[in-house]
Image 1 (cartoon, rainbow, N blue to C red):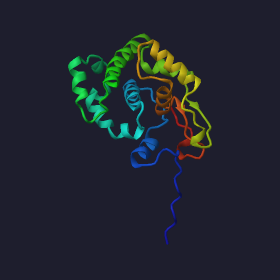
Image 2 (image 1 turned 120 degrees about the horizontal axis):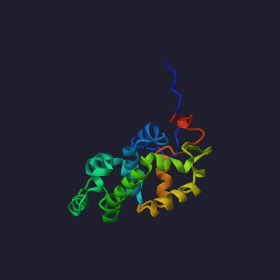
Image 3 (image 1 turned 180 degrees about the vertical axis):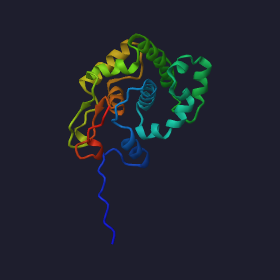
Image 4 (image 1 turned 135 degrees about the vertical axis):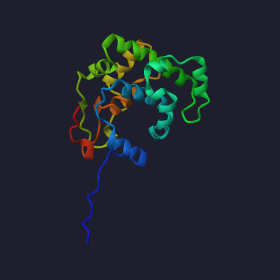
Length: 193
């Protein structure tokens, strides 16, 4: 007779195979690599008004459409590139979001030039270390915080668009700047930087 396997407890939002894989392998793990940070900026901005599951299912299409999230390449996109993206059924074809991604790439490069890396800049909002929260369940997790308000305001001052506080908080969660795994989640154990 086989011994039953213990049930893995995850954050409540990880409900299908895409979300479970993302939750288990990426969400909340500290990211310092600029290309990966740029990827999450594009994806989180694309998510505005949509579900994260929709964006995850199109992630590979975004990777192809946006030069593997190479900010320098995206910053050079022309009106012709923007038109190509509008026609790409594999991504969210929203003119404002596409224009924002191109503009955000330019602002991203300016931050890299000023701070040495975008990671150096973005991590300063939490003192260079993940903010680890202690939520009992997902209903306690806020959609914005004073830190995400500050990040949003500062990014907007630097020319970024589609970076409201809710998007910024989701970005901070995704990249491990904030760790919002619930206390019962198996990923809750401290994640090393």
